[in-house]
Image (cartoon, rainbow, N blue to C red; front, side, top):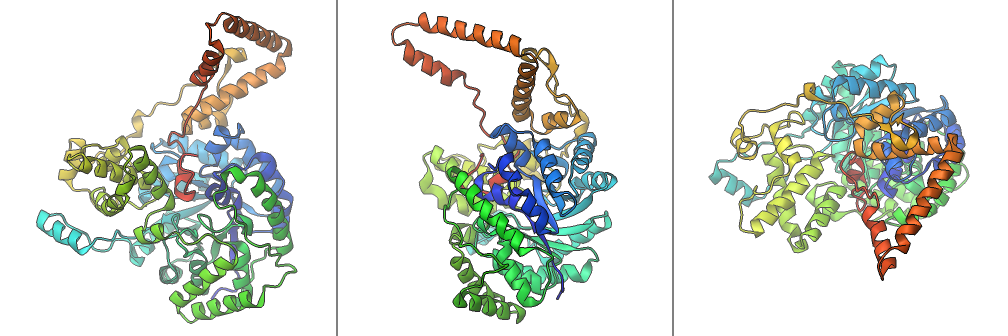
Length: 586
C-alpha cells in the first residue's frame, strides 16, 4: 500500500458540470482561487469537458479567459488539468492534426499542465495525435481508458441469437482488456493512466482487481476517476487506495456525491486512518467548502438535489462516534478484501453525508445516468413513456449491433437515441432499424474509429449501403469561415488563433458569442456612433409599433419570440449529458 496518494480536485470542472450544469461564472470561480492556492491539491481539473461550450453559451464568457483567470489565481501551487476527447476534441467530428495541434498548444500555453485524453471507443489511434502534441507543447499526457461493462444478455436473448445466427461475444471488458490498453498508451508516452469511469459503474471488487493488475504492469502513475451515481463511488476509491492507486479524483464535499465524484473529506478520513499522506491543507479546503455552499445557493436553479452534506472541517472537527465507527468498519473490511461488506458500510457513510440514494436504474441497467435521462425525454416527446422497459431491454442488442462501444459521450447518446428509435419502429409494426440517426450510421460505418467488437458487414450494408468499413477522412475538412462583422465596423469574427479555435470546435455557439463580443468592443470604442445607431433603432421600433393593427401589443410580443436568437444545445459539446442526469443539453 502506498504511503502517499495524490488528490486531483475536480470541483471546478467535473463537480459543477455533474451537479449544476456547468453554470459557475467567472466571479464565482475567482471567489475560491485564493483558498485553492493554499490547499495544495496535486492537481485541479478546471477546463475542457462542457466548460468551453457552456461558458460561451449560457454565461457569455470567454473560455480562454476562464482558464487564464484560474492559472493566475493558482500559479504553480497545483497542476491544472483539462479534458479532451482525442481526435474529436469536444464534439462528434474528427479533426485534422492542424486543429488538434493548435488546441493542445494553446491550452498548454494558457495554463494547462495535464491534458486528460480519452476516446469514446478506446480506439488508441484516435488518441495518438493529442498525446504527441501535448508532450511537444510541454504538457503531461494523462491517457484515460474509458471504463464500461459488458452488456447483460438474458437466456432468451442468447437462445434467439443462436437460432438467428447472430454471435454473442465472450466478455470483452475484462481486467486484461484495460491492462492491454494501458500498456499501449504507456508505450506511446503516456505520463499517467486514468481509468475513467464516467457512469460510476466500477464496483469495489472490480476496482481492487483492476488497480492491482495495473500497478503490477505499469511503471507510471495510475489514477481512478469515478462517480457516485449508482452508489459505488466511495467504496471503489477505498478499494483502489488499499491496492496502491497513485491518484484519486475527488470533489469538495458540497459539490460531491450523486452524479459527481466522492468527497475529498471522506477520502481524506480514510487516507489518514491508513497512514497515507496527501499533502492537502484541510483548513484551506474547509474555507473552499464554506464559499461553495454559498455558490450552490446562487446556483439553486440548476441544483437537482438541493440537499447539502453536513459541514466537515477536518482541521478541527471530529466525526460523530457512530459515523467514525462506520469509517473504521469500512476500512477493516476493505483491507481484509471483503469488498461487498465494505460497499454496504460505505453506502451508510454516504447516507450520513446526505448523498442521494444510489440510482438503481443506472446500477441494474448498467447505463450512464445522462443516457437514461435523455432516453426518457425522447420517449416523452413521442408519448411512449410506458415503453421504457422495452428500451432498456433493447439497449444491449443495439450496442452489440454497433460493435459494443463503451457507453460514454458521445456513443452513449448515439446508442440511447437509436434504442428509442428501434422501440418506436417496433410499436409501429416496422423493421427494428427503420429509423436510423445520422450519428448511428456514422458509428456503424467506422467514422468514429474502430469499435471493440467488429460490426457485422451485413449489418453495415443494411445501415450504410456498404460492407466495407469507412474510416474518417480529415483530408476533406474545411475550416470554419471567419467573416467580417458589419455591426462591428467590419472587424473579423475571430481576432486571433484562440478565437479561431473556438469557431472550429464550437461553430454555432462561438459564432454567436464572438459576434456579440466584437459588437460590444466596437460600441465601447465608438460610443457616439453606437448611441446614434441605438436611437435610430428605437425610432424604427416605435414606428412599427404605432403602425400595427388592433391587438398590436400581442403581435409585438409574438414577434419578439419569433425573432429571438434561441439556440438549443446542438451536440457540439455533449460532455455533461453523461455526468449530469436531468440536465441533458444544458
